Image (cartoon, rainbow, N blue to C red; front, side, top):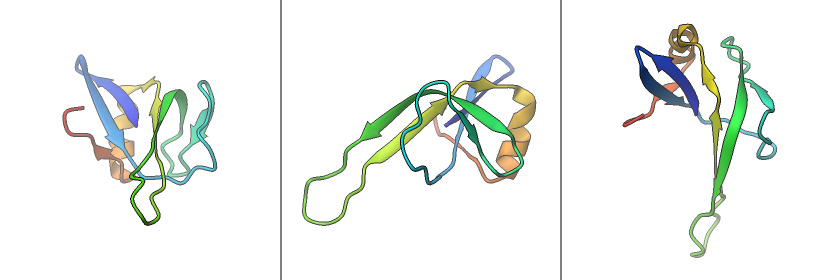
Length: 85
């Protein structure tokens, strides 16, 4: 989740990505979409159902707040606004 402070409000956007592991706080992630990099603020692993079948964990990574000027490029690159964010 990328976070932008615009007009005094926090705007969050999300994007599905494949990562080899949960990156530690302070690591940079290069989005490879022309919108630059973000710095990991914190992460969360949510385990899925233990019912039969394949259920991978959900990993959510929150990034440090970025400059508001980067938000339009992120939206154009396919990042989606988070409802309630």
